[in-house]
Amino acid sequence: MRKIQVFIREDQKAALRTLSARTGVRQSDLVRRSVDLLLEKAARAKSDWREATRAAAGIWRNRNDIEATTQKLRRSLKKRFAAYGRK
Image 1 (tube, rainbow, N blue to C red):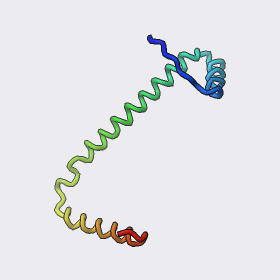
Image 2 (image 1 turned 180 degrees about the vertical axis):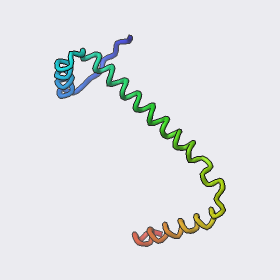
Image 3 (image 1 turned 30 degrees about the vertical axis):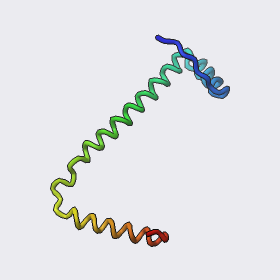
Protein backbone atom coordinates (compact mmCIF):
# COMPACT_ATOMS: atom_id res chain seq x y z
CA MET A 1 0.00 0.00 0.00
CA ARG A 2 1.08 3.56 -0.68
CA LYS A 3 0.42 6.54 1.53
CA ILE A 4 -1.11 9.70 0.06
CA GLN A 5 -2.45 12.86 1.61
CA VAL A 6 -5.79 14.36 0.71
CA PHE A 7 -7.70 17.37 1.95
CA ILE A 8 -11.36 16.96 2.79
CA ARG A 9 -13.91 19.43 4.12
CA GLU A 10 -14.79 19.50 7.82
CA ASP A 11 -18.29 18.13 7.12
CA GLN A 12 -16.78 15.24 5.17
CA LYS A 13 -14.39 14.48 8.02
CA ALA A 14 -17.23 14.56 10.57
CA ALA A 15 -19.40 12.27 8.42
CA LEU A 16 -16.47 9.90 7.92
CA ARG A 17 -15.82 9.82 11.66
CA THR A 18 -19.51 9.14 12.36
CA LEU A 19 -19.71 6.39 9.74
CA SER A 20 -16.56 4.81 11.12
CA ALA A 21 -17.94 4.81 14.66
CA ARG A 22 -21.29 3.43 13.51
CA THR A 23 -19.86 0.63 11.35
CA GLY A 24 -16.68 -0.17 13.25
CA VAL A 25 -14.67 0.22 10.04
CA ARG A 26 -11.55 2.36 10.16
CA GLN A 27 -11.72 5.69 8.36
CA SER A 28 -8.81 4.72 6.14
CA ASP A 29 -10.66 1.58 5.04
CA LEU A 30 -13.77 3.63 4.28
CA VAL A 31 -11.71 5.99 2.14
CA ARG A 32 -10.14 3.06 0.26
CA ARG A 33 -13.60 1.56 -0.35
CA SER A 34 -14.79 4.91 -1.66
CA VAL A 35 -11.89 5.11 -4.09
CA ASP A 36 -12.63 1.56 -5.26
CA LEU A 37 -16.29 2.44 -5.86
CA LEU A 38 -15.33 5.54 -7.85
CA LEU A 39 -12.88 3.59 -10.00
CA GLU A 40 -15.39 0.80 -10.62
CA LYS A 41 -18.05 3.32 -11.65
CA ALA A 42 -15.64 5.00 -14.06
CA ALA A 43 -14.68 1.64 -15.58
CA ARG A 44 -18.36 0.69 -16.03
CA ALA A 45 -19.16 4.02 -17.67
CA LYS A 46 -16.27 3.57 -20.08
CA SER A 47 -17.26 0.01 -20.97
CA ASP A 48 -20.94 1.00 -21.26
CA TRP A 49 -20.03 3.62 -23.87
CA ARG A 50 -17.98 1.11 -25.81
CA GLU A 51 -20.68 -1.55 -25.59
CA ALA A 52 -23.30 0.91 -26.82
CA THR A 53 -21.09 1.86 -29.75
CA ARG A 54 -20.51 -1.77 -30.67
CA ALA A 55 -24.23 -2.53 -30.42
CA ALA A 56 -25.08 0.41 -32.69
CA ALA A 57 -22.50 -0.49 -35.32
CA GLY A 58 -24.18 -1.62 -38.50
CA ILE A 59 -27.78 -1.10 -37.41
CA TRP A 60 -28.54 0.72 -40.68
CA ARG A 61 -26.74 -1.89 -42.77
CA ASN A 62 -29.89 -3.37 -44.32
CA ARG A 63 -31.87 -0.13 -44.63
CA ASN A 64 -32.84 0.95 -48.14
CA ASP A 65 -34.43 4.25 -47.15
CA ILE A 66 -31.42 6.03 -45.68
CA GLU A 67 -31.57 8.97 -48.10
CA ALA A 68 -35.30 9.51 -47.59
CA THR A 69 -34.94 9.25 -43.80
CA THR A 70 -32.05 11.71 -43.81
CA GLN A 71 -34.06 14.21 -45.84
CA LYS A 72 -37.03 13.82 -43.50
CA LEU A 73 -34.82 14.48 -40.47
CA ARG A 74 -33.29 17.53 -42.12
CA ARG A 75 -36.72 18.99 -42.93
CA SER A 76 -37.80 18.42 -39.36
CA LEU A 77 -34.73 20.19 -38.00
CA LYS A 78 -35.21 23.12 -40.37
CA LYS A 79 -38.78 23.53 -39.10
CA ARG A 80 -37.59 23.53 -35.50
CA PHE A 81 -34.84 26.05 -36.19
CA ALA A 82 -37.29 28.27 -38.09
CA ALA A 83 -39.63 28.20 -35.07
CA TYR A 84 -36.78 29.64 -32.96
CA GLY A 85 -35.77 32.21 -35.56
CA ARG A 86 -32.67 30.29 -36.68
CA LYS A 87 -31.71 29.35 -40.20
